[in-house]
Image 1 (cartoon, protein in one colour):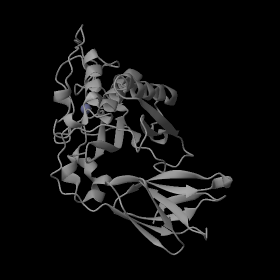
Image 2 (cartoon, protein in one colour; image 1 turned 90 degrees about the horizontal axis):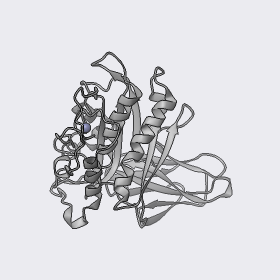
Image 3 (tube, rainbow, N blue to C red; image 1 turned 90 degrees about the vertical axis):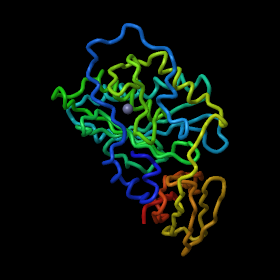
Image 4 (cartoon, helix red, strand yellow; image 1 turned 135 degrees about the vertical axis):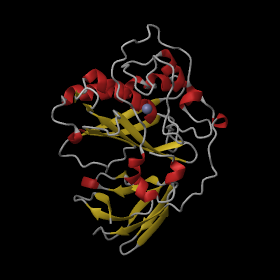
Length: 327
Ligand SMILES: [Zn+2]
């Protein structure tokens, strides 16, 4: 995704994908390096991989102390020629490889849903969406589109992993796919520069070189990620000069439940009655709204992702359950 500032104003067009044509990140074709360095670097390249004026990273939500990265992986997009079990293993290893570095300074965990043909996509609370394409285009092996909040908090990451090497005219091997995924997860966890659509280092032997073929992190990769999560809030610098649009959504009451429904945004709960229209001001272009629902008499808050500028409707999904759908 191009610099978020450039995407502010027709925000919806950007979020819906027409900005993805602007590039996103170029993972490069990770063909094995014929002359890999024998010793891997150890020095953090944080200053190269992030823009000190626009650092972002994952943070705990609300009053939680642990960072949780909710991930949805759309396996229905995986070409049939690829072995699904091997691909899952590669993605899991890439997802997990960076976590110990973050965990040295902050508790972090992931929650992952693997979506098969029976699973709806995009209806859960996932903040990191992964899909596969045969050809990621423009000679790329993979790329990410990142929406971050001001100040400096990741909101949504859309990761695309290519499966076809246009250089070698064959499917990527699992090792190649592992290298691509490891690199893109590096971006997804925060090694990214918005202005240049980059987030790389030029030092060979690191996963965050533009066409890394490494399937394991170097000590420098680990030090860089630990450095990002070790920054104190006062060390972070954010660009707050960009004008902020009004992040509004409307929700209408389409449920047959006659007594009202509670809707929570952030820490504020709104009560909402049949025939009503609720207008909510989001904190950013993407946010989460929770509905109080009682499926099968078991009551709970259920989160739904929402996008500023859209209209939503609360509908019944049977047995006392509710769903928030685009109106
Ligand atoms: Zn990259």
